[in-house]
Image (cartoon, rainbow, N blue to C red; front, side, top):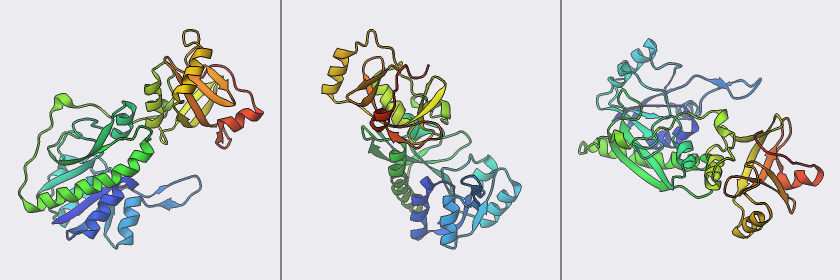
Length: 317
């Protein structure tokens, strides 16, 4: 098949690599414009563009999928299939171009977690399983007919960053299967049940502010979901403290803390120092805070910080 690949971030790299290594004809790659990845840094290509250049694949860069020049370039390619991984929404003027259609690699088992941040919200909601779905794009976001999907468990301590790094390979495996199915011409599609759909909107910095007025499991899931991006954080006396690592105390430690600090009288977010370790209360237990970072400072183990500094009060006040 003659394929045009569309994507920008690192998540799309294993999928692009699979197509490069396949027998399919990769006509071109469409990716976002070059950006500065830090202050005073030179313009650098997206990870997808960089990989395409490395393999001598023609690249079309664009800031908008509505760009007439982009549409004209895609028309001239006369592709059989567009493969889209972590890219922009395609308008009908683009979706209608390939002979077979446009397929997408989505990081959830659709129809659950439609939207920009399926990995974040699967972890935040305490899901134990997720995966990647290959579906045909239509005019609505993440609603198209499903071709195939690959499932994988979510580890009990896995963060968004860790799951992201696993799912990009799960997605590549699913895409490889999908391309084989499409090339055979012998396949059926499964319509999505909209009644089972759940949203996965983009996450922002505010979503990383840890909420101690919830159950311990939900608090821990929130931390895992927002790590490493947008990042978990708390506020104390107007100072923002980044939280880089937390864990659930052992049953023995939890019991001792509960006996010493009654949850009936301890406020959610209350700082507790016990045996040189930093804990904070939520409505039904205590979270163990392992790694913190104050503004303009390096991140440090909480236990190391407490050797030379005092820390008391209530978080997020």
